[in-house]
Length: 599
Image (tube, rainbow, N blue to C red; front, side, top):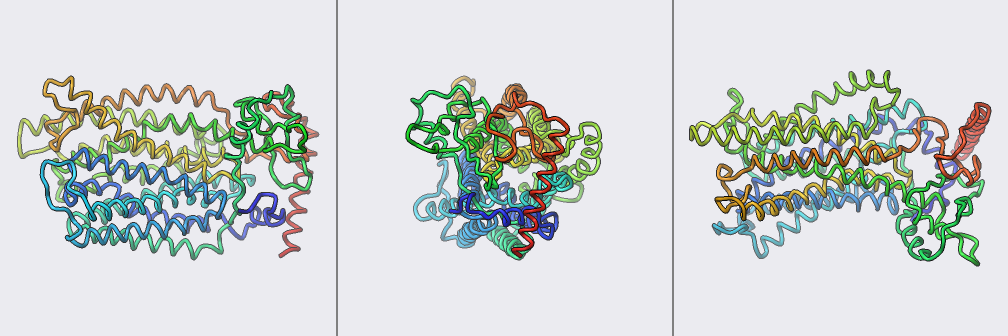
């Protein structure tokens, strides 16, 4: 493990200021991997429910819950990739390591789909027909696939964002653009996957679809490996999370000092670490920075404690987005099942049921460039914010639209079911699902990009992989909560419904009350948005890093630790600002000269 202090200052400066590396040239390799890997990942995320139903002989609730649990585990395991890339390996090598695990998982899924001896016999009337060695292979391959896919996502976003220096005004704007293009590459790869790969899986053979996914992912990771000379690679550092928690518990009986400047900080002038001033939130964590009697230093520095505080402040924002991702999970399962019994013809074209989610992807392919080239420049002129609007405003728009999407989904389900009852054999068109999918696609465009940018920009420098993994952690909890909701709603409504049947129970949608389930999620989403407004108002952004030396981000030599509380720090005078900027410029020039001499 490489500590922060062991990184020579000239290397750190060289990596950050080297204009021959990084930028959009390096990001192209990230975009290529993202598109190729998501071709298979999103296609499988959508079509696996049909694979479970038609090949593994699960019933609808079991197939739905198995898929959502798999997706939940995938996104939860992104924390593993984020932690490893921040602490042990750099982000580039972490992506390649977990990429190999993902490809192994895909290969095992392909093998099981290829040989009928590895398929279960139809058992009829049971939630699942999978057992014995067939179950072992199925769940082992899904576990490897979840671990690999999750680990890649935990490190890849931060690897791409590392290619932009946030202290350079131009690159700070490019960073906001990067997150939009990263999402666009995800969407474009997903669109190809849910049309091409899903069609191959359902019309040709499942193993051909999985094989295509495996090849696409392999090519993507090879492309990334060839891009290594163009990347700005950051060495991992120590993660302070466990140390701060341990220190706070160990010193829990000690009283907090009245003045925060007596807390321990590393004020070594030779240190290149960026220092974070003390804040008054979560003061119990400050006990980790208390210098005990007989010791020259504390377990942790103020900066390390504040890094953990930053992550802690993010948790309510993360929690407020879980319900939206629960809604996403429902669209990816029940809407596909709805579409499979609707008229799949759009004109003369017959759309495979597994390709139904291409509808929101098409919307996003059109709207993301429009957002980047039209809305962002217009909003920048008004707000003077590099991203046009703040990240939390963007997330808020997504939450509102997700609630609207669920309400519309319930209305569409009523129309679909009524039409089936009135005219059996003449279902409504698949086109009707485009309303709920289209609205949710726009919601996802706002919230996903907003969360990724928020968690990256607000995180401490040595914890950005772990922080961006919070976006996927929200997705994970959303998928797990989806399974809980399905089981809970079925258990409750089974007792109160006249039919003694749950809203989404059994294998026949026409006998269920899926519309009521959608409306329940719409109401829950509205309540969740009110909760989000509170936490978004409570959250205080870290000072914008495209401005030199933010108020409470300063180097050890710039200010004493007495400038602790950001709300109480005096405003710098113009002369002091100029002097500080001259000092910073001089330091940068010195560091660059050292780097040139070393080269």
